[in-house]
Length: 506
Ligand code: COA
Image 1 (cartoon, protein in one colour):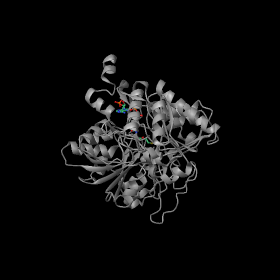
Image 2 (image 1 turned 180 degrees about the horizontal axis):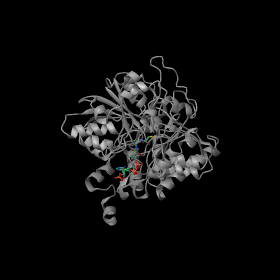
Image 3 (image 1 turned 30 degrees about the vertical axis):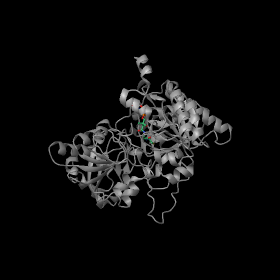
Image 4 (image 1 turned 90 degrees about the vertical axis):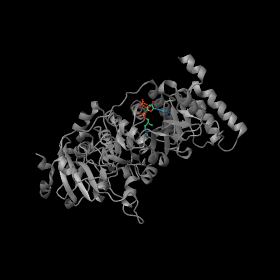
């Protein structure tokens, strides 16, 4: 049955077991693997690698992917000690622990940049690529599944290519992908994407069939995503943002179709997109990286006309119905390599509204999306930096408090900066929205404190700024001995709340 999926008959002899294919990978190698936000990762060969390591073989690799992996692969590979170095993104609790213990070296990268570094030799040679596919064309072209990620460049650069044909993925996925690889520097041509709908490449990854070293047949599905339904606070965040965009339309800065939307992962971004379903905006488009349930809900309610991304990551509820009916969506969907979905040139050209999530933001507009208390890695910067720096409107959303109120997400100074004040236009919490455009730092602090900080922290943070302005002054007033007073309290007392408030709450 799988032979119909390998249109080039000379490749039939390359079909082997996952264990045989995994033997192409040895200790110390650099491996590029498909997979982007739990979608379209190679599934069988990495499991065979973990089995070998668990049986006692020394087998540590540098693992480069598109983004996070599904089917608990990051967990399994970390537990088996296969993952020695990891880039450019992860979101797995076990791997996170290994990273924070210093056992895995994690290189946290802008998702658009990884393949540039590979192409220019800065990451060393790529030994093996493992790419999940729907099928292989007559000329050896690899048709990816639910994500493109970095797979095209991995397959083009690797010394050996392993293809995992996943027979649970329908062949009607052919035609969904648009594989465009930028030309070589220093005379690189402009990327010809001028609209979310622009198709500028091939529907498959072009690979010389002689470079395909092994083909494995699998039937394991993508993992589904757990998406929290909108709650009171995420709905409030969505409403603040929609109210703001409404005002932008009234002022003639945006039309009712807004601008192409990008939304990050997670429940807040999902709630915001859901909010667009009830708004009076129409003919919306998305130029994003992960297309989640909300993308398809917006298609179904007629609000969204076109979506471009690099992967499709769905909840259990949506997974079957979307993939079964992919033909009904295909004419309105494109999956691109992540260096194109996240390309600064294209994002700036299209003028995106980018909506990403902050762990914490500070009163001047700097955002930390990755490090808890400045040291502990959460997931990684992912594509948020690609979008935030280059978007027309760069929006960051967060609930004003975390961990039952013990943590204020708005602080005097963030403990790690992923997105600096120059890249952040709007901050939204359930308390309100701070429009930071055109404001100097002293003005920004006032707006952020008034609109975004939870009432239980508002006075203390306002007092901090007043004292810093009075005693230190400057463009961006800070008292270096006090800037982290909330974090120090959290470290020492387990809460950012003053002792009296904590005792009262108990
Ligand atoms: N300090 C410590 N922990 C905090 C915190 C803070 N200031 N703010 C939130 N948290 C904790 C939450 O309590 C929660 O913990 P839990 O997992 O133990 O419940 C966890 O961080 C996740 O927060 P949550 O509010 O559920 O938001 P989320 O699932 O939307 O994730 C990010 C938020 C920032 C971690 C996530 O969006 C991310 O990794 N972003 C960076 C990458 C990115 O933006 N990618 C998309 C680009 S397209």
